[in-house]
Image 1 (cartoon, rainbow, N blue to C red):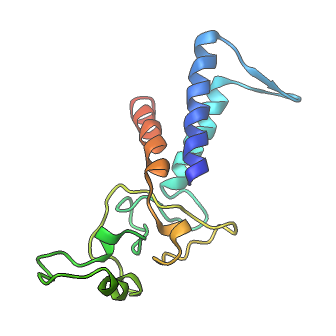
Image 2 (cartoon, rainbow, N blue to C red):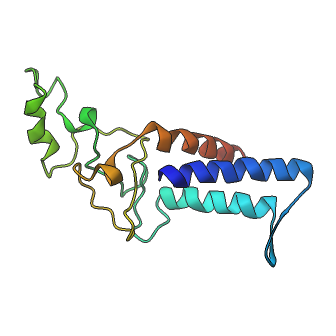
Image 3 (spheres, one colour):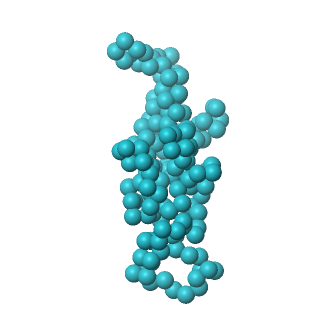
Length: 151
């Protein structure tokens, strides 16, 4: 999702620039209008939120199907209320390797997303697919803010 969110944000920004300049981009025999660029960006956001072959939202806590085993220490360890004893660095492996869903939801975090064959293992060790990062989530915030004002 790193490239998807960043490129979609750039498409949206460029779309706004073209719109204010009253321009379009010739692309072979087609023309990319500001409206087309916005539509492409919105389709990518919809894909992230669950309009995809798996019917899975890649945003934790959004929709009925979303990642449950994200690669995130705070999400995969039990809370202090559930486990008041100290958990050492090496002791966390048992939680990391557990097939159980994370006990804590990091609501709103977007994970790396599907692999090259559009499959999603929903497993902590597959960090490329299951880790939420700022460089995935930050551009998406801009996209969601825009589309919440301009549906």
